[in-house]
Image (cartoon, rainbow, N blue to C red):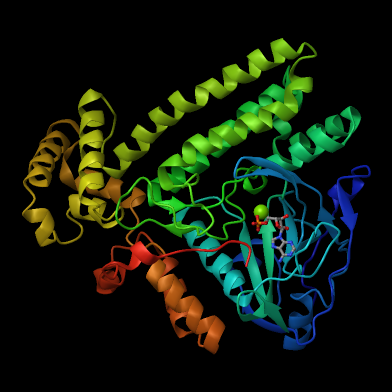
Length: 484
Ligand code: AMP
Ligand code: MG
């Protein structure tokens, strides 16, 4: 029986400069560790009946499916504010898999060896970090947040040298594309005007074909990508997700979360939370994320100016008008989103005031960003420290009055709230325990049970609620690492 691959590799039709032809470097002892059946189904791929050795070879790049044409993409990007030439240094796109309805997905091996863009890197990835990406991308999916998917993780049987020696692995990543703001920066800095135009048209055709008819396609693309990334960052803010490395090369034009190496979820509310070990100045902290996305969009706009208007001043004016809308739009949408978390049907000054009061109380008390909303809805038991906190008690009784008078009562409100407030998020301590047991000892029991819990994050099941309690002091010491 056939697996169902259906490749149509349009990126390869772009003219020279956008990619390099590459081959995955063979691995010594391929061994499939995880296969994502949910995603396989979505991709209409069927791996049942295929021998384990064959699957292991496939998901390490030792063998390639028919129709694949492996490439690595060129891109650049602003990393922590500084422009750098980058590219797929340890990733190979084997092709674009297309579903009968026309939906197109890049299939990418991450950790599959050196490429022309590897610079001093080894092109490899550790099992730990590929399992991390698998776990988090699934968690985001089930939270309802756009993200690249993880189809499989396979061990290479070869050591990867970091601070210590790790087991190597390849992740098969799936995304609507890997076009980044950084890909536009690359074209803008290093390729001709004609090639930039070709890439603009390609991107519009691939992601937003309805914009083909727009009077000003480049400006329309800027607007669309702004809206997409605004919605994305708003979703991160809803669940306390901190991407951790929001460089322009990690911002997808399709509006999906990608490249979340050092990402983590916030527990106690502190807007300045940043877990990444390299983010010393907290540039990518929780509350900086919307502003950083706007900054990244300004970089994107800079690459499009020549196509917005031949007159550079007019082009800048038009782009700035789009960029200027980001902040007020975000503030409005953020209130709407927070309003849903609090069960409001609409937002007037009264609701906005209650939102602001709650946020400042949470900041002061470092209240848990997930559990607090469950307590407010009275879904979860009210812990003593909430009960004894006079400010919270007052706030809650004001909230309850408003819910009763203006929002159809607590019953309806808590139904609304349950759709916006997860009960289960990937708590950092659980993630680390699961990853360490799986990658160091090959014991997947914690990994599997955590994956199960995260499959239904909105389920109001209090039997596992103790898992959501963070060990005292854990976050203080917690650090995440990128690119491992
Ligand atoms: P990231 O931090 O994963 O977004 O990666 C930033 C850049 O470094 C990208 O160009 C990656 O391809 C490259 N890179 C990260 N890790 C490696 C590695 N082990 N070998 C080669 N290139 C790498
Ligand atoms: Mg990256």
